[in-house]
Image (cartoon, rainbow, N blue to C red; front, side, top):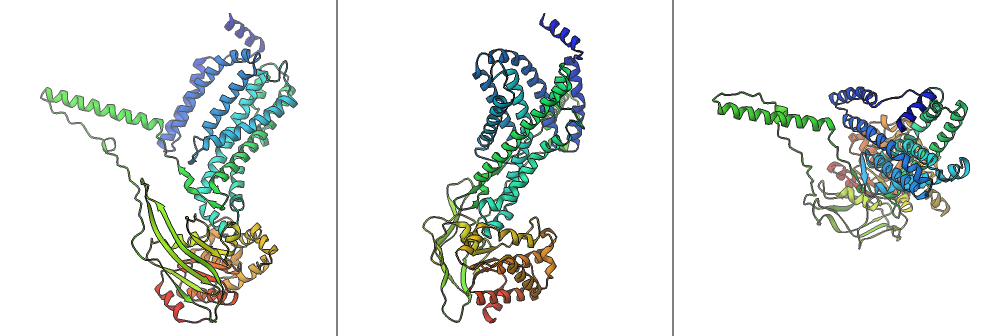
Length: 578
């Protein structure tokens, strides 16, 4: 009787019935797309096949359970709340399932963001705008609308989460560069955060831009098919789109800020990429089917061979080299530091006694060994001082921890306990202020968005730079820094126009000269150079050496310099520059 009544209702409303065989028929083209994905190695065949199966099963179950939920939900709000929570939990699971990187507590992070924003939007929608009757939690309104909120949120949340995690891990060089110029955690990650939010918000913005012109949304279509007037359906769709946009943007912002909080140690303004791990690639559904087919083929072949041997017949079965290949997995090797000595000695000292700028006592650095509770010590009990105008060389074989020493002094890696490190007698408490005075220049090529001029303007806007202006410490204004960079670049064989070229188009040597020029022009208290001339020819190296010595002598900058160039060591130890 119920089916006959439903059929009569559909006929009366003019709605065309779609039977189960036709639904299954509509899946078939997606099977061809899955085969195309497999042949092109797109790795999309498994999500396509599983998605089709889940869509059919989940919507079938939904049709069976919603009616009793609607009946029970009118009597008790907790039935509606329980089902809404279930939808939020499933959305959180799916949103975190496809990111390239993951971290401990990622599900809780996304669940918190979704739950907070869905709750706020629901109270706003049902308590202020829709106000369903006879009860505010009328399940016929609450469950479908929350479902639409979550269904549209999942794409934006998943995209922004993946973009934020990938940017923090693979964009570590950019973040560390900005941190080394005195940026806080939020200042160093602000561009990455903005890009992640834009990435997640773009699908929603695209939908809002073309709605009603290119396509008619699902809810509006359903209401029209159900007999509502077109204008009523249009107004409901406007309301739903605004609610979806509010929920999506709010969830994306909450989620990305939580990821930044997890990825950084805010007490030290330090990026901790070890908190993120790369998700292992899962095998596709078709790969599993192919392996099963190969196993069945080998079993049948061996059975035929055994049967032939019993009958006295020799059966030759061709061997598929791909199918019968023994798979081996490359085990990543971890190379620990070789035995060697990390040497520190002064290359240039001022003529008269000057104040000690940097003092290090009992420095040590170690890292955990894979699959062990032990730690590999790179260096320990390392003590030295750097005075104003001094150039101190850091030497030793590769792998003894020279770069880690500079990163440790710059506050880019954690200090271990019982370590004494001070700058002008003050220990590193606020790391952004510490790094504003200690300038670390990496040996890696700088390849970040924008131009060097834009980079200078960005770092001079950091709060740590403004703080030193207020403390009456000399910090060069942006125009003076740009002028100093021009003069240094011209001395080193580059035109001033290179300041307005994108970092990505600069060669390794050009980018190296540019970042050293910016570092010198920023007038740090201590300059840390990590093989800062290894990409330069001999003539340019000598020019850079003279400029560094000039700045150290003239402005009282202490320099800690890593180099493997023995000729450079000899030049700087035997020549005197004014």
